[in-house]
Image: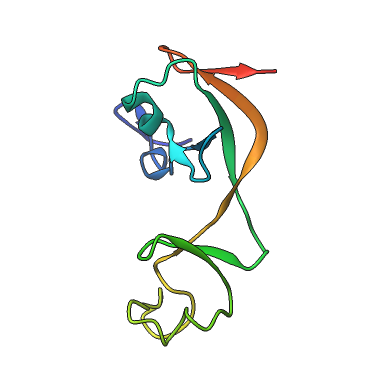
Length: 114
């Protein structure tokens, strides 16, 4: 049984928010991003992380790359290994692709489109 802290269960406060693609963007964002712009009626597609294809997103240079590229790694001025010694850079994040679930943004939240 999980111990509750207020209304949030332990471990849920650190959970990453779901990400979504809009029809006209190649970048995914959280639901709050779309709500702030007042995009009621916009169609959103669930974003799913891509694993095992050797691609990554650099959060310093805001671009995608492939594992083993000559411009990423020890020769990069911003390279900082996650373990402090060597290996994957701490600025290397997942790339995402559009999933099959589509949603319509409403004032109350999301409505799934079937």
